[in-house]
Image 1: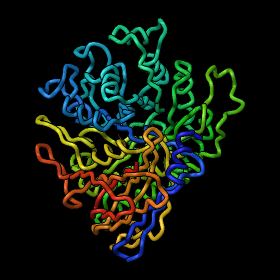
Image 2: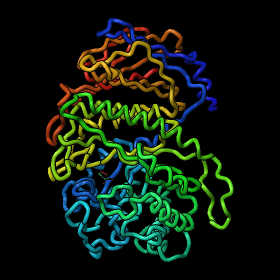
Image 3: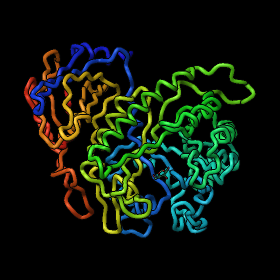
Image 4: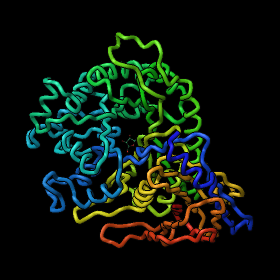
Length: 512
Ligand code: AHR
């Protein structure tokens, strides 16, 4: 156990108590925050982002060569500044479904010599002016680790291994030299590589929807990629609910894969205003189940043949929620991918992030899908750009989330009045080893104010601050060129004093 963690646990006197007065039931809701028996790290990588060759997600989103708003790289500076402010630790690329037809060699070399190709998946033409080198440069600009998904549809294992060499090769070899020729001497050291994307989906351009076939092909891809760079971490396609896929895939690939990759989008239902929260809870439960399921694969892989010529997986298999977000038929455009997110979407986003905190033991990476325009946290057009409502929880949770998980015990949790099944308050808590800070993240999903009594009885902490995010109503949304509908206020909170959680609010109580 980390020494600073122990010390702080003593300082906090083991328990920080919050008594939440529930205005509905007139019964005090008590939330106890305590040190867990074992330290659980909260990975910063749960704050990842994702870009794809999908209409204006990349070109027209983060990248636009002919725009006066862009820099010499073609990066939209207004969008770049918003991406930087998210402080995202990981940027997944180049898809998504498009990976099944994407050939990375189309996107290197002099831009005007790169082939334009039809985007057979999402439509339109991809000019390939944003390719691997631009992507890595973008990652460096925003301070994110690159994470690449290889083409297991029309691509080959050799092509994937060559991509690994182009990015990570250090020797005097063809693809490493090609990277040098195109301007970068030092290897990119891309650590994260995914073996395809949603390969179980029968409808799209994949050819591996039979799990046995996917497992066999993945082994072959993995071998060539690992022989090229044995240090890379591999992600394998899984499903939160389909164990007839997960079982054969992991039975075969568990010795070499580091992460299982899940995708989960939630949406509103016209029949049930609370459906979005119920869907997040369902996913939360599936993560617990999957975490238990992964226990069957020993942390140390035994009897791994030396003839593979690379080492087996090091450490336990973890979950990466490679794509998550909000996608429903209130969004517009082709496949309902153009979403103007409401404040309710932001409340759901905050609840999702609380899930990733609570599931820290199982989930060590998660990537919001997507960064710009398409399901985007940021909207951009030729005139400008704007942070959508969902951007703010992504930004503020990332800013305040600590490095380890705190235990949360709730007594008398109020239920949303309209339904009586959905919990009014959605809560997680973290501790930050670096600055000795406890943060409690509370989403008030009801349209009633919640009176909250904070009780720091056993704490030596001196101050608490409430960071409160609100919007005029559930349907409020941001638009390019207009003032943001989101208000963010920081208020000191008195020790042992009462605080009020605004209706439909996202709150971070920072205890120092
Ligand atoms: O993010 C949009 C699409 O959603 C991705 O291409 C695919 O992986 C998922 O189904």
